[in-house]
Length: 89
Image 1 (cartoon, rainbow, N blue to C red):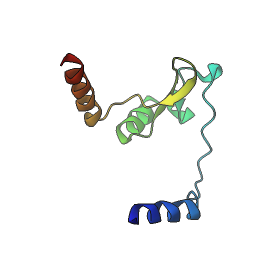
Image 2: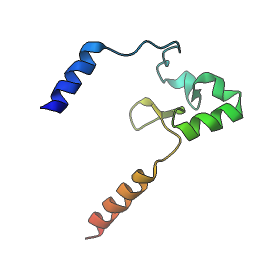
Image 3: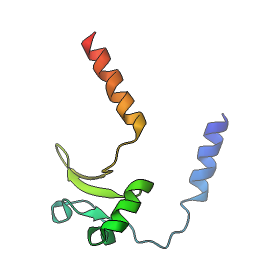
């Protein structure tokens, strides 16, 4: 019940105001580009944003383009190992 209440309050309050521009839609013209766009020209900024988990790269999936994270969290590695164990059984 508390979770539903917290979600309701968050939706009612709306997103916090930000000064950064909205991320553009990922399409063929941006394929391989980083977001924020400044990271494409500044490797130090790209490295810092990747460590903080704020960097995204425009990739093409099976059917559409999407923004994905170029980094992996340690929990994602364990989830992959669990799936492989289940498939082996």
